[in-house]
Amino acid sequence: AQKITQTQPGMFVQEKEAVTLDCTYDTSDPSYGLFWYKQPSSGEMIFLIYQGSYDQQNATEGRYSLNFQKARKSANLVISASQLGDSAMYFCAMRGGYQLIWGAGTKLIIKP
Amino acid sequence: GAVVSQHPSRVICKSGTSVKIECRSLDFQATTMFWYRQFPKQSLMLMATSNEGSKATYEQGVEKDKFLINHASLTLSTLTVTSAHPEDSSFYICSASGGIGPHNEQFFGPGTRLTVL
Image 1 (cartoon, rainbow over the protein chains, first blue to last red):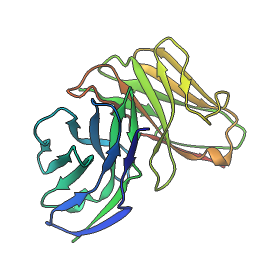
Image 2: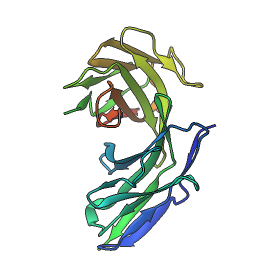
Image 3: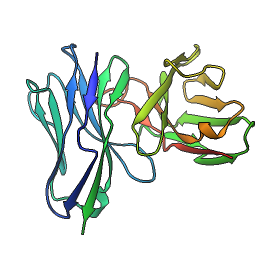
C-alpha cells in the first residue's frame, strides 16, 4: 500500500535559520511523484515543489529544495533562510495513480 | 494560469438544511475534480473524485446520498451537503486537474468553511 509519513507534528525555528521537514514514503510503483504543499491559516493549499521518481537532480524552487533520497524513500523539504511568513502547515503528498496520498502534516512556527 | 475558485468561502447554516458548494476552474478545462474534507489540525481526506459527465467515485465511508457531487461541465463541479448536521461542520477543499501544469498536478481552490448550527 502507498503511504506518506511525516513524523514531526510541530516545529519551532528561529527566523533566518534553515529548516528541514521530514517526509518518508512507501510505494511499490517505480514511477511516482512527490509534492510539498504549504497551508497557511487561511486554508489555501499552496504548491511548493515537486520531485519525480526518475528525476536525477533534487528539485529546487527559490528558498525551497527537496532532499530526495530514493533508496531511503525520503523526500525532505528544506527551507533556507526562514521567514515569519513561512509559519504554516506543510504537507507532503505522493501521486498514487490519479489521487494524492497525503501525510499528516507538520506545523511550522517561525520565531522572531 | 490554472486558477480554481470556490464559492462560498464561508457558510453558516441551520441543522437540516442543504448547502451547495461550487468549484470552478477559471482558465482551464478540468477533466477531473476532487473533493476533500479537512478537520482542524488534520490532513486532507479525499471524499470523492468526479469526471465530467459521469458519476462521482466516492471513497469508502463517504455517504453518497449525504454528499452529492455533480460535475456538469469541464469547468464546474458542485458538492451539496444534504440535511446538514453539526458533525458535517468542516473545511471542504476542491481541486482540479486537466492534464496541464509541468507536473500534471492538481490545482486547489481556496476552500469553504462550513459551520452547521
